[in-house]
Length: 296
Image (cartoon, rainbow, N blue to C red):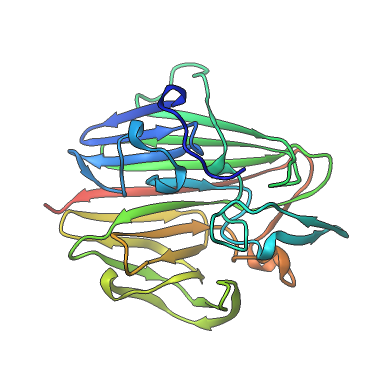
């Protein structure tokens, strides 16, 4: 399963509108958000849904059943070795799970629901990209001032399975883009972008132009605040870690709520780094909200 373009005739686009906000989804491209706009101005890095050809170019995609990198795609679980296939061009590690590379289905409404709500579902069967069966569900709710996403994974395998959850939202890097985050530490990286040691860092409060991160941050407390000349955004989540990605040569950045440290599955005491063990039939749940206030 590698990322590939999907013809427009196969596209599954769905839009929600509430007040000045418009949310466009592509269920067939990783259950991703193609774009989020406020009076037509991109809140996230956005593209019209019929123009999105790869989930990695989306505004946001789900991270399931793990976040970030698994070193060389190898890990041991309950005494058995596993090897994952690579899924990310140019990387020696598979990244971000399988959800963002899968076709999700739009869930039929079971009855009366909110005017701006839709759920997407995914059924994964064990393969070379993830060796455990699971089902996943995303619920999107849009109000005139905010977006809420819930993500649930259920272990449908016959054995216990490791899981993690998160999201990968991208934001436009504007002239006065600024990020404020309160946290406790940052994981240093080696040359292969795998974590080595946790160093103290009480927070991030700087213009995006001055940041150069591709790191996981521990002890995230309170909201992440993103402000520029168009919007004041407030990002909250039930998850307690963030991956902050600020490529200096791009016009976007990412602030990613995640449940576990990168490559937690290969570290001592992975549960202490946020990895969850689900028994057959058990579920794990997370939520993320983005409040949008116009400053223009």
